[in-house]
Length: 102
Image 1 (cartoon, one colour):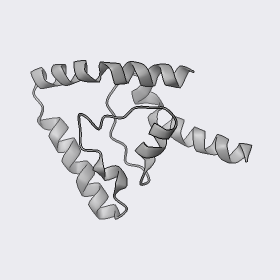
Image 2 (cartoon, helix red, strand yellow; image 1 turned 90 degrees about the horizontal axis):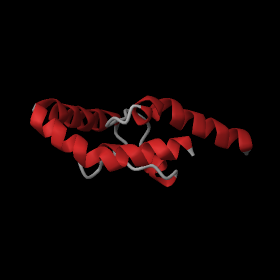
Image 3 (cartoon, helix red, strand yellow; image 1 turned 90 degrees about the vertical axis):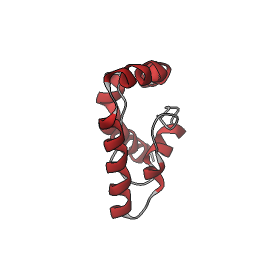
Image 4 (cartoon, rainbow, N blue to C red; image 1 turned 45 degrees about the vertical axis):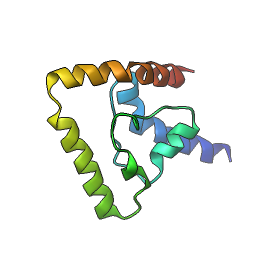
């Protein structure tokens, strides 16, 4: 049981460590319900900023299409919008960073 939990945690850490440590927005191409698992571990995601419905999509092609749409949306933001959204996400960045260190 301990090894299983450890393996699960390592998988979470490796996938999210860099953006959480760098206090950045992340869009994860991972197994379905991955963001849900992160939330269960106490992390916050960016569902108030971006469409995270891709996390619940089990069909791989549809999932990829949803992720691409999210990335295209982010890529369309101008510098001013990026600054505004970064300010909105600041609390999430700090929370996740502190959660990772605990």
